[in-house]
Amino acid sequence: MRTVVVDANVLVSFFVDRIARQRDAADELLQSQYGIAGERLASVIRDVVTTPGVQTIDTCPWRRVFELWANPLAALADASIIAVATTHRYDAIATFDQKLAKRAKDLGVTSYW
Image 1 (cartoon, one colour):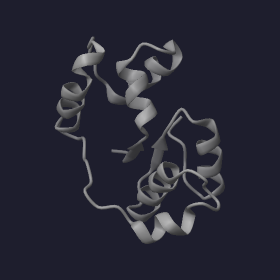
Image 2 (image 1 turned 45 degrees about the vertical axis):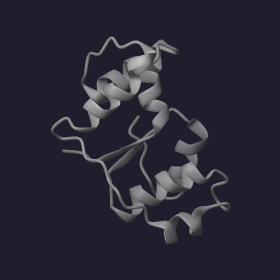
Image 3 (image 1 turned 135 degrees about the vertical axis):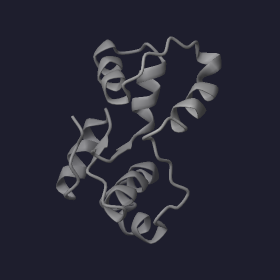
């Protein structure tokens, strides 16, 4: 089984019908079929993260985050995603942020898509 760090934009695309192509890709990744209104988003995310096979982490490799932020990654959230992926040796990151996906590749992190 592949281990993937999922960017928040993937969850938003899954739950909020904003870009059909991204929603379909997120749906395929999460392998779920939820038709949830925005006001139930937090509840649904709690359900998703407790689904068997989904793992949440409570530790952040801050030293690695600060090595990546602000150079080569300007955004703290992006540095955190890459730091978690590299420190914990995840197989890929799932993000719709093409700039982050390119930067991740430059740093040796595979993009899920």
